[in-house]
Image (cartoon, rainbow over all chains, first blue to last red; front, side, top):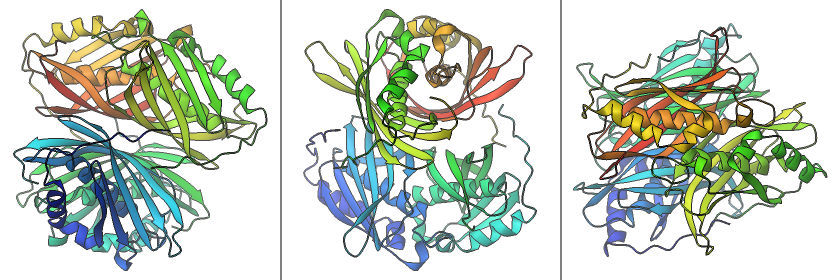
Length: 152
Length: 152
Length: 152
Length: 152
């Protein structure tokens, strides 16, 4: 229903830039998260089930889903930034739809509107089982700001 | 300006219940988080700076602030639930006000409105330096649901 | 990217029920709003440009876009409720993407997750020109609650 | 618990500017809204009960509460902007706490963080009865952007 807009990156080195910034986030390593997909205006992250990522009922902690959703949204925005601009989330909203179950979480971030200063992005998080079936764990909306002179 | 409403817990064992549920969250241990304060309708959490909790510029990752804010809000709600009801965050919104700097993060959750099914809570996160000075890192609004028969 | 789930209404009289509830909202008449489309899990509203609906720069007031988005989301949820349950928005979040320009606003609400108590819905608002071209004015996420015994 | 920060206006003519911008919003007139209080970083609006402002159960429509909350937040931000900068809401989140009952709605907006580009503000909406008693109708968080060269 909502069509995906098409985006053109303004920095030819966007892929290396996103990958390098992601690699500097020690919290991504703590979560065991990695980049599964990168495209202009779109980034997908994946993290596997692990003993240290649980809430009190044994599901993925909502903080894990949220962190992945936010990071996917932020890097989806960064794919479209000119060189020399860094990305910061200014605010976001999450709806937690189902418990975070599955062998891994997949967070898919996509740009909704790319502005000069502000970018609006959406993220969906899915819990994926071994057989590939998916449950929709969370959906969210994010505002990102482009900061000049902040190396990212 | 916004007065804090007064709340009476309905389960005399609320403190032990909140502490036990918190202790079952392995992700809290991963973050090094602990409960700093518990009162009816109010919970404060603290987590110290650590190498594995950073974003790309060396600050606390927004996912850490958010996880603490959400967990403080959730347990603030749980302090007021009758015995036999568990708590689940259904949605929330965070505004990230300043980079997460400091020796520790303090997340302070408080109930805004306590309903039979839904509870609305607010959380503020502060970065605290060694000298006790504070920066306001984030503020958020949370909706929690009380689920009967879910042991928490 | 996000697939639209398929929904089956539980009340065969859902269309008449939504239309009757909408007709009772005097604020919809104040906005000149009408239902443009109804389907299970989906409702579209339209309101024409009018002198009394403006903000300080002559665009549709964000309060108008938001009211339409919220009402479209609420009735999208109500299409799926059993008879005897009323709908109430418990919370929502809006991102205002572009000024509300155009001859009319179109608000399209759709259910994202239909639960027994809570429904999550999304709404998009577009400004439509005389030539049918559209600008994406706003996007939002809504939580609706089903209240038994509340006639809607 | 959350202390109110102190703010100094940067434009000595802030009061006249806010009043003039408010007067240009025709939608405020449609709602019968007026400014009840202005201070640096804070604006209160009031609107009386009226037949054209209702939802289907006879309460104030959530769109009315939300519009007032958003406008109060926006003008609270504008009180602190330098001359020559206009204000635009980029996004917000509302929690609807109680039905909008009472003889009038009072929306109280206050700045939480005043930045160069972005301002974060909070708004609370109360329904006030003839005897002065109040019910907390809604609470929300708003992000406002300062736009240079936009006359407000």
